[in-house]
Image 1: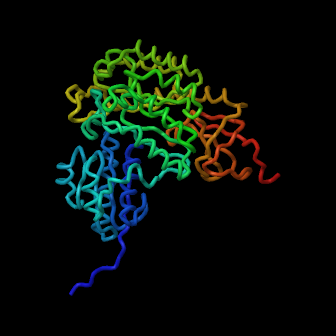
Image 2: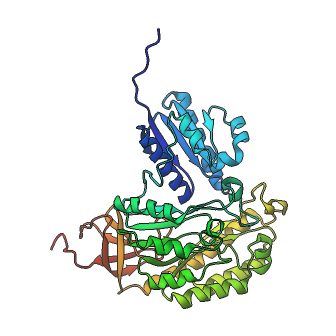
Image 3: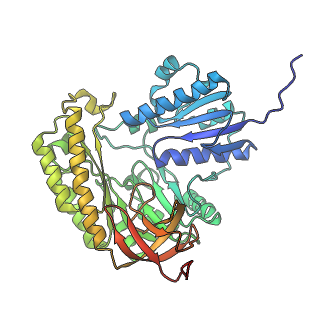
Length: 440
């Protein structure tokens, strides 16, 4: 008779991709904990759940390689079970089941209850917003909507995440209050499209109404906006941003391109003139706003003239933060019907040229900060430095403020005023005010 094992299972949740996936993993982990399961994020465990990304080619490759790595561990006997969820699994489940059959089960982006059942756990509906956060204790992501209704030609997100569905304001306030009770001071609002928030529930754009409710949550001191679509942007948000100190003077607004022929083919619903007018309005209403954007180069049919229009526009606009990606030809998108006619070396050269320009712009903007005193949130200690951020910077993607840890002791999660003494292309260096030097 076989003896029943007494081994305690430990579930290792591995997250790939964007902040929306981080949020989803945290919800999964919260459900598992509520079922008294031992769960950890990216720590060794005998059961592995991989939350995949399927957005562009590089992300898909990373997801597949991660799956293969854990399947190899399963075959070696160091891992017992491997489950796969997230965007790649949603989009390519039949292909993955055929190509990598040694995964125990694949689940899509909306199959959390089924995934929990496979992990011998029950989906607990009463856990509104309860989750195990994986970010530093002082900030957390707050996903305000799922899916996207935009028709962008290059984007596969609607295939993986479905149509736009806003989370009601009252539920988001409950989530924010729970996060604040745990010591979270900064909420980073995320969605596939913040701009569209509320149209499905309230028949109007309700981002400003949501922000007015969130600023009332005690303990929350910064609220940051990510992923705002430019078309239909609710301008009342800008007036609220200027008036309400809790809302960071910061916006992440992926603009993707500026050449009118490319914008039309991308189905972005805007033009260079409209985009420039919106950016002018941003800077007029909130003069010290930090604007982050992302761009795509090498889109089908992008001519050298289109690229030069984009390049010159980047030089003129002088964005505070900017990321640039090469176009990825994604099956089942509208743009997949077009010929992917820009050679990969040309795509990469164009992206590098944009980022070289942005590096110089960032360096020049940073030099203007030398001598200023900036309020910083301290995120972590790394090597010989405490690492902080200003309200103009989001975690992981933006600039950081570095403070010599051999000279000063700072508490992670606290706000500190820092006198900026030196600036590089992307990072600032400074001295904290009101903090005694260790060797004084």
